[in-house]
Length: 150
Image (cartoon, rainbow, N blue to C red; front, side, top):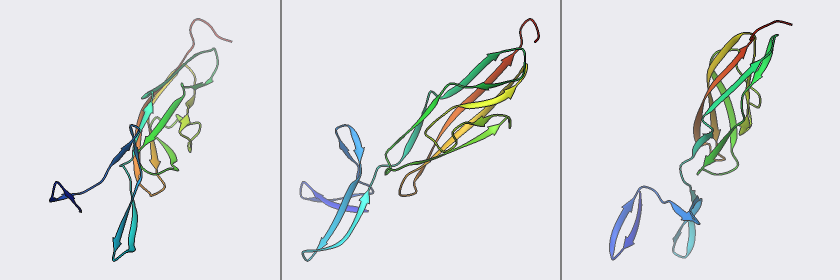
């Protein structure tokens, strides 16, 4: 708990958040006692992450098995403390893979023939202090062979 004086009364709060130019920024709180620094620690905003767009899809028409690749997805962390690390995982169809599993920007792909593959991709974002956030993306990949063969 944090105690401070406001309008002559003692106010208690559980966190401090500071906005600078519209963005949450880390704050360092220093505790002084008797003119000496006793403790300093960072206060940062909670980390969140969003994926844009929140869906990934790819469609391919050929007459042979083909790797179908989705559109590009980018995960953006907010709050927390940089630098961030990224780890993608896939739930659902095991044929769907993450093309850049340790990156904020990736695509998804699967080798398909007259078939489709659906999955849910989760990006776990970890900040420099170990705080974690996740972003979830729906993945749909489709291959079709219309009207002929090669």
